[in-house]
Image 1 (tube, rainbow, N blue to C red):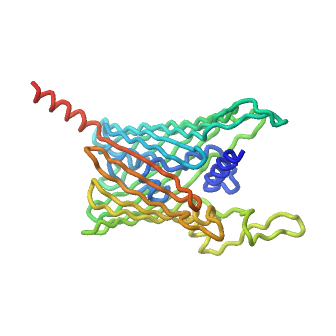
Image 2: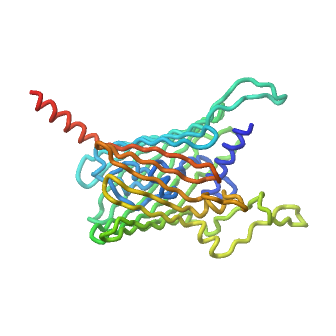
Image 3: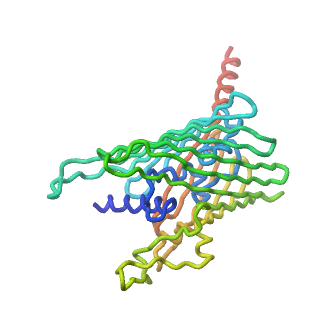
Amino acid sequence: MRKFITVFAFLCFVSSRAQIGGTSAFTFVLLENSARHTALGGVSIANTDADPAAGFQNPALINTRMHNSTSLSYANHVADISYGFASYGYSFDTASAWLFSVGYYDYGKFIRTNSAGDILGEFTVDDYNFQIGYSKQYTDKISWGINGKFLYSVYEAYVSTAGAIDVGAAYNDPLNLLTAGVLVKNMGYQFIRYADNSPREPLPFDIQASISKKLAHNPLRFTLTLHNLHRWNNSYVNVNARNKEIDLATGQIKNQELTFGQKAMRHVIFNTELVFSDNFQLRMGYNHQRRAELGPEDRRATTGFSWGFGIGVKKLMLSYGSAGYFPGIASNYFSVSRDLSRFKKRNVLKKSVDL
């Protein structure tokens, strides 16, 4: 039961990022999909490079440098929660590119009981995200892209499916070391409901924008990301708050009254990267909403902060990311990416030498 409560609380947090009170389904699509995104605070839709994982969040970041490249990621979360991602990029011409991805979310095993508490066995809870992305270069600095998703959930005997799309645009100015991105995320429809008599549930719609600037002759790159731009008041009722107020007329907990600054900061993610070279980067991020809504009032510790690094080893890019969701508990992400074309060229060269 303790494990189930922990998983349920985690899912409620993810839900709160998309719909106040957790009123949307398929909220797993909001989870970061790589160690880099974890280290940068959970959302990164502006930084362009050759890593296929970048196109999973913003399809406009899919580019021809991802041709025949793959990215694999695994996350170890609390209470046996784990999830993994795989992406593969391919280009048919020099102006457009495709990305094929799959995400798998496993919440562990749970004990099945009847109303009397008798143990009947075990059951599992799993989510899947099958995704195809396409991007096209509009000008030398602007690109646009679209992701198509098929979402599949299995919660014991309850099954649901949905379809969604992301539409994004990206701006890249290499001369001024400036990039930017905008994304409309998770526009979709629930095809099969969890129960025949339940209403169709909305998907976790989100609008995001980001701008990133790298300093000249300096390894620092700063990024500002805004999320949930379609809804100004991103707060929710914290039933565990010590200073909560009760409406004497209704007996209900009054909504928290936040200042303008508190509401604004719940939309903000800051991060920075120290790009020493293509083979070595240090990353740090800060997600204010995560810190404000998950950190205990008396000891927030590192809640909301994240960090990680990327190291190139023998044509592999290895990345690690750690994010603080609760004091003393961190989510750990591991990613590896590889350009398969270099692997093939090496094999061809080796064969020619042998001959």
